[in-house]
Image (cartoon, rainbow, N blue to C red; front, side, top):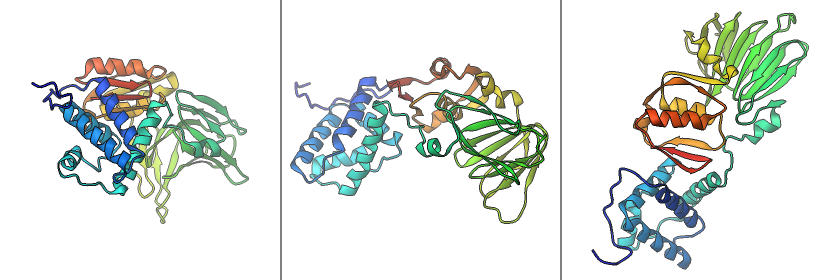
Length: 331
């Protein structure tokens, strides 16, 4: 063993200390403004290469931070090859890396990634992360708006329309008004006259769950009129080009958010984390596909998602690394 500070050490990779992950994120930030052909850029890249060689954990940490953002366009092995051959990276690769670095910096600065400014501008009613709202409409209908959600009201002479722009809402529709009540989403619409139901947007789909009455579902991009009618206790997934067959749902779990709870029964960790992310600023990220399939059961208070995460971490074979209050890695 020599005293060379850049001597390669074959360190164990079972666990990555927080400081190593932080160093990897800092290197992404340092690399964002340099170009491969510039003198300053070559110097930074050389320093980065020496940092990679200092410890095998550095390579793993940088690879994990890159993969974390879906931007592993330049594997660590490419960096090591460049140290040996002196090859130059293409500028287009660096523009992608710069974008990734900006995202990492945004996390460390506490920027809330769940903020959707378009929804803020379009919505008549908007809730922030961790906030809910009770709404009473002019026709006597009532809406409960869940966390990080937005909707717009458009009542006309022929129909009562509500557009769910983001998030989740519980509808208790008044039957005293004869006009149809239509909840519009990007994937499709839910039409009723008087009933109780829940609609949640999840990515490119909407999940409609009926508690009482009857609803008619229509997909947005299906030309022929092939609606699906739901009966109480049944739900369907509504996509722009199809509607899933109705299936029974657990009313306790669907309405738990109205009681300030999240209920999971043998639920994949990926889905649980996605739910917790709706109730806290920043982002919890699961690193590794195998962990996504771990199962979680329990009832958790949504007003303290970090406490729920601590319980889950103490129950499952996982570790959580808090880079900041806004960025938590599950490994």
